[in-house]
Image 1 (cartoon, rainbow, N blue to C red):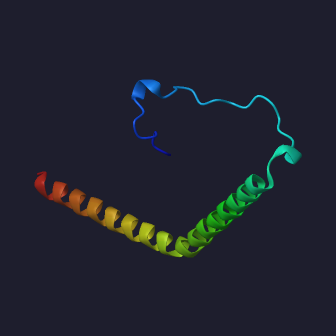
Image 2: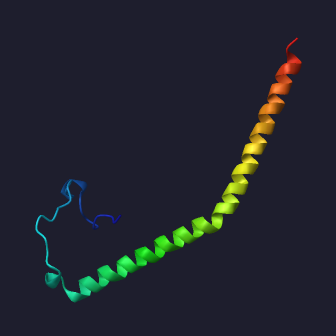
Length: 89
């Protein structure tokens, strides 16, 4: 998110963003803008692919950590139950 230009007062910032109501033909979009949009789309695709790859690589470690946490939690619950059993006559 970008910040407002310096010197703008909050009262001067519009509350609603303008919405395009007309379809713009591809031929009306300047080549430099089209190239920038395509580069941005490729950058997004590469970023999402990296995120997917990281998730695949991390899945075994996350599963191991979840298993370890569950075992530890169950062990702690059992210890707490044992303590309660010892306290009750």
